[in-house]
Length: 191
Image (cartoon, rainbow, N blue to C red; front, side):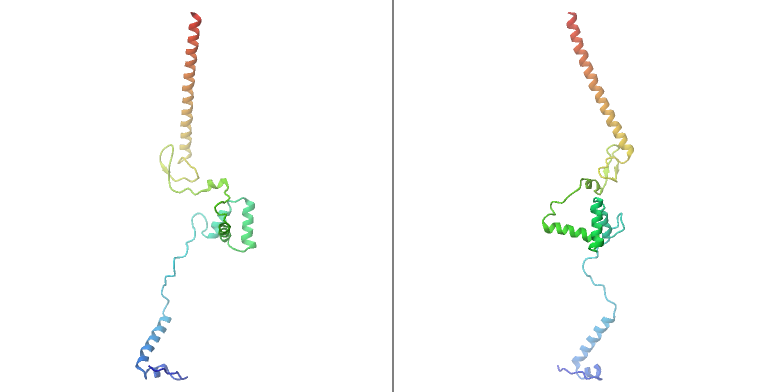
């Protein structure tokens, strides 16, 4: 196969007519150009983008970070907001993840500082059974034991009634024991 230099003004067709092998190359080039003009095909570029969080807040990572930072004392929260927004000029979620990464790199991630009230903030998922009526319900707060306030009050009344009944039985037994003790003492005094 011989190579031919393209001279200005000479067309590609005139070159390809001389060599039968170059005709196939011309068709390949034309096909490539057609592919460039065609709309791009969908190419799988890895995993899909993360979906925004859309539960109880507006849906972005920054809103989620703000929600988490609001659980801190106001002075710490305000400092974190100022640090992310004004000083570092980064999204708040980057500040949070950067702090976690920094803790990991320094070896302190296994010993975090945890405030006691955070245990009550846990998201309650799933269903529970009411301790009074035994119906299934979805808790709306941490540690919820009853499906309604009415069931909670009824259970407490039942518990109070049981305690009062137990006290009454104990009092009756104690009085009977006192009577028996007094009866035995009186019988001894008569004889």
